[in-house]
Image (cartoon, rainbow, N blue to C red; front, side):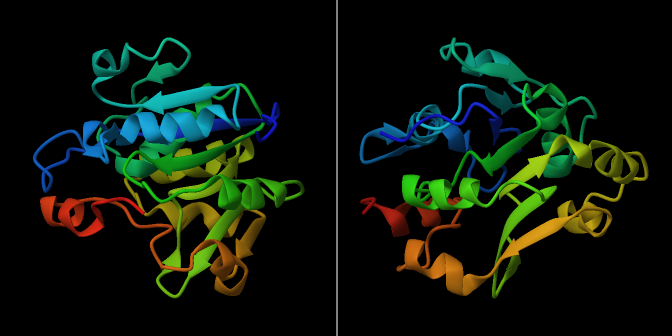
Length: 199
């Protein structure tokens, strides 16, 4: 079993409106296991400090070992969720992911966390661009994120230019992503049918 990292928090964003899916994606089941349980089981193997950022906190009361918080700045999308998670994080940096990424793995998370150190942001970069909802952020990012939030500029990578960024290129990610699904998230019922059963 992977030894937990005492200096990194785990932030799980579960505050989306789920308009395309029509239901709370975190509680969808794949192979009989809810996405939220699958992701929290992964997080628990790595992080002692786990934070769920959500606009529906009462839905997550069944997880007593997890801190459940709501957005400090409402209606600011994933960037607002990252800010809120970092604000409440007990450690100097945190891994952030969305609640609907069923293909995250222990091996990749171990690799990503091993890259942390002198950088404010450690983020995978694929042919599609940065993967900002599967990245590590330092709490040093908070002031730069806040400047974007108050000016309503909500592109997550908008504050990257202010920070010391380590971009993990695709060739280094490839061994952990043989089928190209590592960063896939679930937005529609069709997405659910395409991935089931989960390999």
